[in-house]
Image: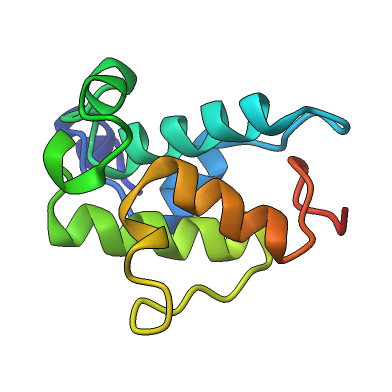
Length: 116
């Protein structure tokens, strides 16, 4: 990501994961939920806020996440948590923050990206 990308809010999966850093070991689902929300905010170039997500009941579409931001989010989640996300197999789960948290947990990944 270049300085111009940072100024304009442009981001890719690498920018998303490097901006979010590593999680603290032992965080509960609420911590994982907050981290997923933060990834959404960064993946959208801060167009969608955590408050937008909460106001939309966690729905990515209702909060305003577009298709490019969605792809950035999925790539970041796969890199950060080492999970394989399949939009055809799990479309409903990948449509909400809580669904994403459940998939990450079901894959046996903790908040720090290591096996739970």
